[in-house]
Amino acid sequence: MSKIIAVTSGKGGTGKSTVCAGLGYTLAKQGHRTLIIELDFGLRCLDIMFGMENSIKYDLGDVLNGKKETLDAIAQVPMASNLNLLCAPKTLTPVTAEQIVEICTSIKKYFEYIIIDTGAGINSHVFDIVEQSNLIIIVSTPDPVCIRDASLMSDEFYNRGNKSQRLVINKVSKRVIGNELVSNLDEIIDKVGVQLIGVIPDDFKMTVATGKGNPIPSDSSALRAFDAISKRLGGEFVPLTVKIS
Image 1 (cartoon, one colour):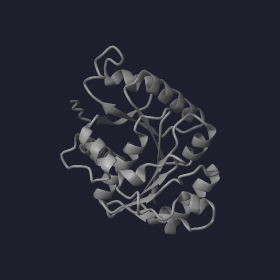
Image 2 (cartoon, rainbow, N blue to C red):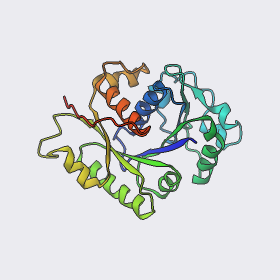
Image 3 (tube, rainbow, N blue to C red):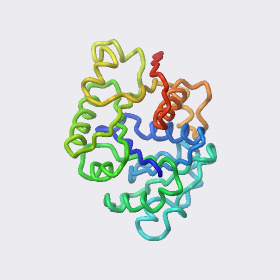
């Protein structure tokens, strides 16, 4: 049985798509058949992150319009043989939560993990899609606005009965932790009210790799963090050690 993971955030700019890319990449490298479905309609970016900008023939829009079957629109990511991508369309395309659920249901037997990169923001469209997932990962940065939005989103999920939530704190550095904005990571966890599954350091090597569509370097601190989170998703006990530079 595949595990559907919805990655979402209350605000744009948290690095939600980077988190999807990092998790998908490390899960695939660990041997898991993984698919990322990108729902940022009109604002897709994962094709660039994986160095596939000029090789995507079909996208989710072609599936929704009935031009292609889902499996035919999925592209294999060259840098990780177990990783596959269904890109968002470049233009705004009407979609319903039922359509996304139907797509996931029709292909889940082919993948161990399906990661849904939702659009950012608090709206019913996101909630309706995320409700169908096995796990919700809420992404926040150590920024008071992002923290508050993550808390509001998590509260709404709980109100709707979605209790399987985990928190990823992204773009963490010594510049932002321990200053006047955020005193420590525990403060973020307490304000959001969701169990922490991982902390991603602000890593320039990761930024360069995803910006150029290159594999993430093995000495990337962000890659090590994603690898640990992916193992936790699979049920392994991996200590949560946080090294902030």
